[in-house]
Length: 165
Image 1 (cartoon, rainbow, N blue to C red):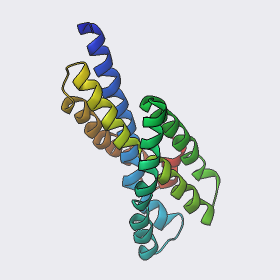
Image 2 (cartoon, helix red, strand yellow; image 1 turned 90 degrees about the vertical axis):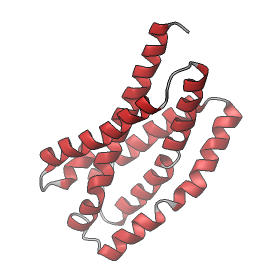
Image 3 (cartoon, rainbow, N blue to C red; image 1 turned 135 degrees about the vertical axis):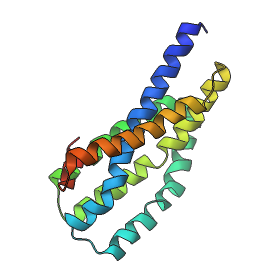
């Protein structure tokens, strides 16, 4: 692989991590507040959601990993999960009541395997194309921080707006 091509690959992967984790930073930073202020959930209900949500990774991650292995196309599986999860989460501002919880649970099911698949895919690329993984992943951390800070300034007290982006 040419040096230019290697840089292009690294830049695309860094951009993906930055944008994806910026979105997740916005989502996770404000979701508890959204539950409390917009859905009027109790702290117990919010805690229950945050307890149950990771359990979906126990189911969806192995399924997605198996599909990536069977079809030998991790990139496509990641793309399908990201697009489907984005479309699903964009419906939250258009629905109400218990349907919001069902949509968020479905979102968690789709979202859970994205990072493990992405990490595995990019680590594989970094080995085969001889570049370091850590600077690429660092861009994701910066995305989380910057996304959270920027949206906090924009949102103020109106947390419903996070589901409009």
